[in-house]
Amino acid sequence: MKKQSMHRQYNFPDADLYLQCMERIKYAQRDLEQFKNYGYDLERLKKFKAMCDKFRALPDDDETLGDQMLTTDKKYDAAEKLKTAIRGIMTRVSMKYSNRSGRFRKFGTSKLGDMTDAQLLFCGRRVARVARQQQDFLAEVGVNENSIQKVTDACRNFENALNIQQDKIADRDIAVEHRIDQGNKIYNEMVTLCNIGKDIWVETDLAKYDNYTIYESNNDQKMARKHRQKSENT
Image (cartoon, rainbow, N blue to C red):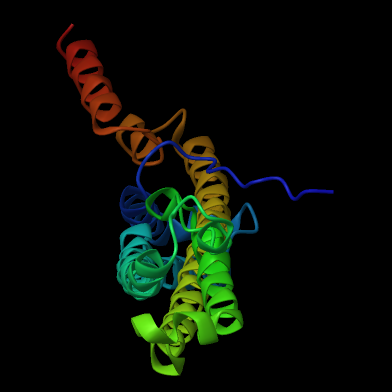
């Protein structure tokens, strides 16, 4: 069964989540005596802060995406070098055979510029294999072991670059999933903390109650502040 993708349980950036958590930890430290009545002690608060610090240290998606883009650029470069090596063979082949002949078409390079990565890799290997099979017929136009080896080496370099790129894509997926998982954990802990805080102050201190209100955006916070100020002035 395919594993379901993870989803964030919060609707604001990770940086905002971290700042909100740290702010609520500060308020809980202030109200620690009241929190103890709910079984939420200093030890749990310290563990929460440690979780937040680990979350802050995780690489964000820009970092992992940057690594992926670098490997993609290297793959593109390796692909172009492979195409150049293939064309070096095919230019010589076209001097010997018509591009409508079976011997020419056997190389399978007619759509070289439109090939996928997998197709290009298979094409490079086929060109080297077929060129060796016809080496005696193509020697007079300069197809030799050196020119064939250039294709073979370019195939190996391209395959290596392709594998590295795929590894980086997988690394990014894993990092994103791990960050979502850790983010959800500290978000849920913050929700628990805030529910306790609001329960403590709901009937005695509106300002402290608001300290534990979670806003999904700055606009939500601004609207709540305006509403509170309007209520105080009436």
